[in-house]
Amino acid sequence: MKPVCRRCLLSEADAGGVYETIRRRIALLPDDARTTDSEYQRRLDCCCTCDALVNGLCTICGCFTELRAAKSAMHCPHPSQYW
Ligand code: SF4
Image 1 (cartoon, protein in one colour):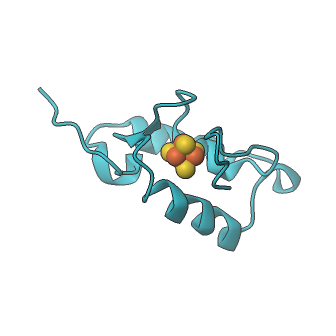
Image 2 (cartoon, rainbow, N blue to C red):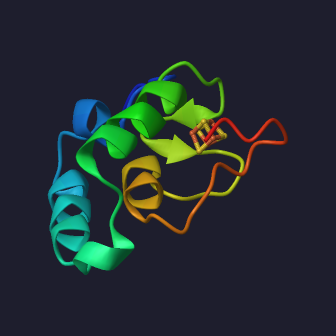
């Protein structure tokens, strides 16, 4: 059974192919729909300090955090809206 990794992004927690699929989906986002590199990193830094992040999933919304953070129109679903 795979261990639960709290505050781990999918890139850190996934030993299988899911992260690669997410990475490809991010790469296919149109430029005007994708966050800048600096904003993407800022969002992921917030996620990495959040208790809702488990095995790369946001347990509040069920999204892969790396994909959600890559979409510029999205926001953090936490009541405190970290990003
Ligand atoms: S609640 Fe926000 S900061 Fe926490 S894991 Fe989800 S998207 Fe990231």
